Amino acid sequence: MLLKDKVAIITGGTRGIGFATVKEFLAQGARVILCGSRPETAQAAVEKLLAENPDYPVEGISPDLADYDAVAKAFAEVAQKYGKIDILVNNAGVSASQPLSQYTPEQFRKTMDLNVNAAFYCCRAVVEYMQPGSCILNTSSMVSRDGQPSGVAYPTSKFAVNGMTLSLARELGPKGIRVNAVAPGITNTDMMQAVPKQVIEPLIATIPLRRIGEPEDIANAFVFLASDKAGYITGVVLHVDGLART
Image (tube, rainbow, N blue to C red; front, top):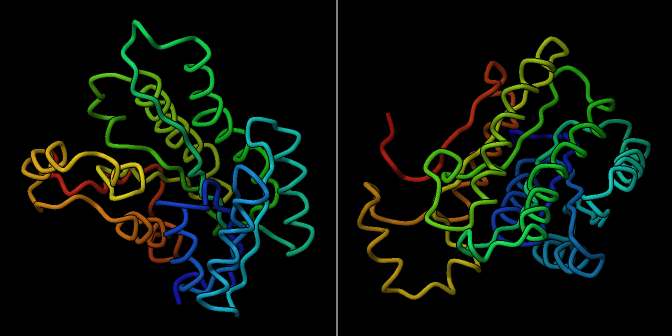
């Protein structure tokens, strides 16, 4: 098991990529505290996992990630209970696709609050409980490199996540804490399943591997970067998008 006896916090862990990552971390031996936006969604995710394996060491919490004090309190309780926090996965995020002329300042702030500010709050709150060999993993996106036709806040926020990743890798490296990011491409989540087939098929044709990603593809990348197998990797934004990049 690649993550045996590790204590991991995963935000946005109730569905999609986050849920797949929680499940794979558990399969690899980690104890996982998943964060949901509401107590009921966190508990529902925990119950679903325990129905599959009653022995999974998993629990759910639901701090307001846009409130630093709430995050700090929740993480302190985890550290007090288990004596450490080895891994943080900042996966919670939000997106919108309106064109600039319709994108309100409130929508922009909401996206930045969850995608950037919350990631910073979690990093700030967790680092005091981390020992050498611990790691922070952030969820970026292919649009942090490529942009997107509309919905400017999302790629802007993910570009900021990349900068945070690189900067914290430099700052925390001397303490033995690695910081990396995973940048998913088009992935088969609930949101993508709602997109019409005639829109998806032309996109698949542009991908050399001729398929969109599965949440498990992204989860496997997180597992690798969280494990000791990646012990000499930091400051990397790993693109998991099926594309051939230079």
